[in-house]
Length: 347
Ligand code: PHE
Image (tube, rainbow, N blue to C red; front, top):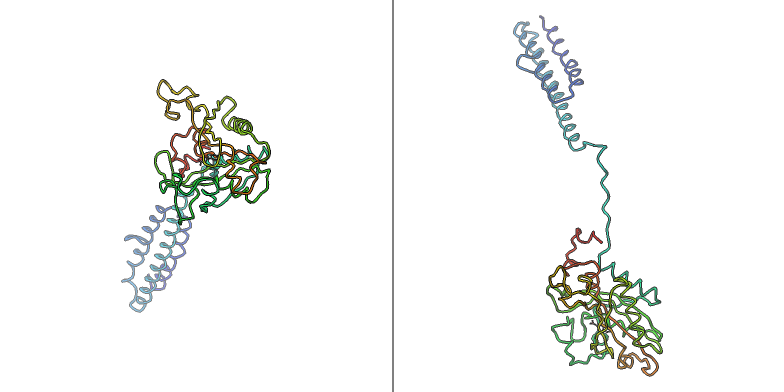
């Protein structure tokens, strides 16, 4: 073999290797090709074995060509190998099974507290009540003073109220909306006011923030019978026609007379026991309290400039979490505030 022949044979390896690469569809194919061309007994080695036999003039060029060819083959090999490895990764993650059921997009849902607020506000809206809102950081005057809660009243105790300054509080109830509404509007007035309220209270059944809905109706000749009829029909719309309603005498500084409203316990159906065991919702009484109410106290009318001789009205305040717990059978108040989607997604 002379030098020229050897160089030609060496150069011929490049297209032959390329062709082989075109047929190498797996890393195994590729490895077989590498052994065939670049292996210890491969085609390159075989040609190189003839190198010592050629003339010493041709040998340097032949040697250089051999190195170049080896470099080319190695580059081609590396490129193909990288491409095959990439393809292997891609196909592993992109396996597509057309028989798999589709993945439904996640759907948001309203918080049970929001649902109950919307339902209750909707009921009163249907009766012609307006929905109003007001500030959660409230002036002492609206939260207490104008509601006939004088400075020395126990409800003002630091135990219950979160103070921002001496005269500014986080509202402890939605009742300041009674005052704000009456100061802004002339009678007749019919409003409901949903919102957050705050108290210095935190245990199993109390959270420092919870929700209330305030209601207020003022007109000439509003009677306790109107309060009773309105709240009874409202409660039946929320809890069903079979629920029993009871009005219990109570006291609030801003209503006179006052009544707390109980409904027959939704857990035990008013029996006080579930499966022979004491009902933990009503504590065996068969009744649960859901709202406070009463006839607007004349002192409140005076504070807002309504004539108590001409106008009468009723007001009520209801705890939203409480209603939601009873309505949906939720046993733990803390569920409302943990934002666990497994809980929230059920409503
Ligand atoms: N504001 C009272 C409370 O938070 C509830 C209430 C509202 C009572 C309106 C009577 C009239 O307990």
